[in-house]
Image (cartoon, helix red, strand yellow):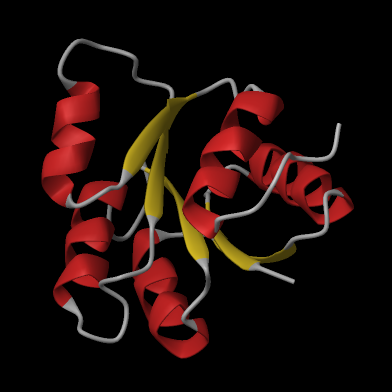
Length: 126
C-alpha cells in the first residue's frame, strides 16, 4: 500500500483528510509542522507528500525546498495544499519544488486523481 506523508497543522483538516485517504487504501503518516515534515520524509521516504504551505516552525515552501535538496527525498512527489488561490501561487509552489498544487477546501476526488497520477495507480475508488 502506498504511503502518503500529510504535513498539515490544522487538526480538523489533518484528521478528515487522513481518514478519507486511509479508506481509499493509503497508509497515511502525519506531521504537524514543516520541520517535522522534513524529518519524517527522510525517515519514511514516503511515496508522496501532501504539503500544506502555511505551517508553523518551517513553512511549506521552505520544507519543500529542503526535501527536494536532500538526495534521499528529492524524488518524492510533493503536492502543495493551500487555501491561497491567488494568481502566482501555483507558480510559486512549483518554483519551491512542488510537483503539483491543489487548493483548499479539498475536493477529494480531484486530489485523489492527482495522487494516482504520481503513484501510477488506476482509477481511484469512489
